[in-house]
Image (cartoon, rainbow, N blue to C red; front, side, top):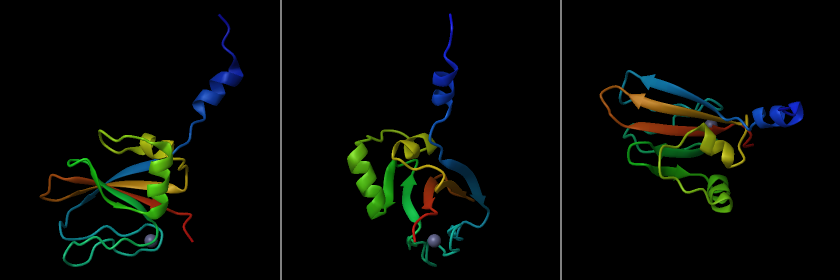
Length: 123
Ligand SMILES: [Zn+2]
């Protein structure tokens, strides 16, 4: 059986979103935006998203705590139904590629994991 090299390489070149796990030893410290450095939470741990944050997703509760307008639009047009954890594969299905960096945050003394996705191409 002959496998076409063209088809094979096409299958391997998929859209890629980078995802990294981040652990913060200080439970009260908020995550900072990797693009502009702005803290995403105030001192009361209330979400204060900068313009680069595409979404924030609670992996345990399996729900979004923040969605940017652009992200909402992409979700609506792709009709992806999220029934599980949000990951790089799902984000890639929304048309994001290398411009998006997803950080999955775990804090000391806290069971929850939150996924923050930052868009580097928001001007
Ligand atoms: Zn920012």
